[in-house]
Image 1 (spheres, rainbow, N blue to C red):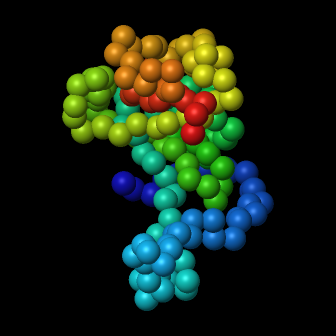
Image 2 (tube, rainbow, N blue to C red):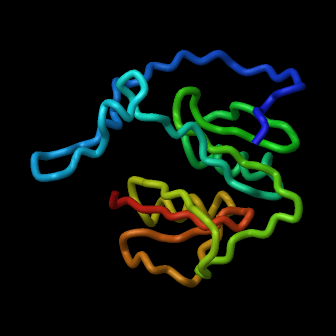
Amino acid sequence: MAAPGRGSAVALKAITVIKPQSVHKPIATSSSPRLSDPADTIGGMSLAEVACVTIDCADPKALAKFYLQVIDSELLFEDDTYSFIGQRGAVNIAFQKVADYLAPSWPNAGSQAHIDFRVEDLATGVAKFLDLGATKPDHQPGGDTWVVLIDPEGHPFCVTASW
């Protein structure tokens, strides 16, 4: 993926980010193996941090607009090929335009990943997602624990109040 904004002028807001002290430390007990070794880290941190999850789609601007209504985020960058949403210094979501994009097929197996969203109340949360344009497929393996929904471009995602 090319770096966003290369060759074009984009005005972005300056945001002050207060990053918590290493919240992603592995937990090891005397009976469990070490999950990481200081020799495997850079300056005491893991090799890398997740910066962004990129989702293929046909219309990055439209899909970013949908998700901007879902999570507490802002538009970080947008052009005809990419839209990035999130908070500076946090894990962000990017939407990447793909020619001849084909949406994943739920519940069929295939090469796909999905996002899980936590809401305070499952029924209320699902109703709000549906109002924003998500759809609810017939196949629902989550029982009363979680609901599978489909975003406007066909990506499945889950909604739960349990975890």
